[in-house]
Amino acid sequence: MEHYRLLGKTELWIRPIRLRGANLAAIAEASARVLDLPPHVVAVTDAGKDALAIDLLTDLIEPRQIMGREKALLEAVGACPGVDLSPDSRVHSDGVLGFIVMTRQEAERLEGATEEILCEVKERLSKRAMVFPTGAEVAEGLIEDTNTPIISSRLAAAGYTVKTGPALRDDAALIARALGRAVDAGYGLVLTTGGVGAEAKDQTIEALLMLDPAAATPYVLKFASGTGRHAKDGVRIGVGDVAGARVVCLPGPTDEVGLCLEVLAEDLDKQWSKEVLAEKLVARLWRKFARARPP
Image (cartoon, rainbow, N blue to C red):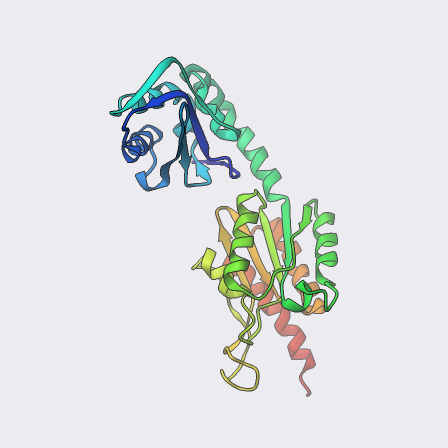
């Protein structure tokens, strides 16, 4: 079943409405039943003098869950104790959730055409890329970011719209939040450079695993942990899938990024699984290190 990406527009507003000792949890639960969503992903986030905001704590929804549900939602909310609606009460929303105001007949007619629309939207989103350089030395302007320009050029040649994100400090939680925001904003491909090494400051793989605990993170090189600056046992790359977006954590050296782009360009056409792409990236980098070893 195809899903709509809400792209951050997750609120439904009911106006006008009058509340008199209403139980907001009961309103959220009634709304969840109408929208066929688990109760924990529906919350009432604002209850004003004449308006009520219902927030969906998800970025994905099936068309059937929203199309033509306005009347049912108003009836369910209006049946909650302490809630008064008027004949003029309506549900308002931006973005995809605006489909809630359709009649059932309109929804049924549109749903037949939705598959083609969704495919077009999905294709457009998959062709949007965000690139984040990482590392204090880049964030503080101590060194030039030589990776983002070659990534942007290669992706643009493949038909992508590319945006450069801010340089991110070596902080796993900060990096994870930035990656998550890019995914929520509708970028189908999110790349990082740097921060995949064995030093304690290297945190991009850890950030990726916060978003996709099942991400593919194979080793490029392995070390004895605690040797020299090696606080960790090796250098890894990472490939994850987050809410339909592909997230790839690349090395920092520009020559290695160039090698990875050769593999990534092929993946853009073939759409490998994250495990296959990760192993192919590692194999390409291994060839570089094998050539560098003395005979």
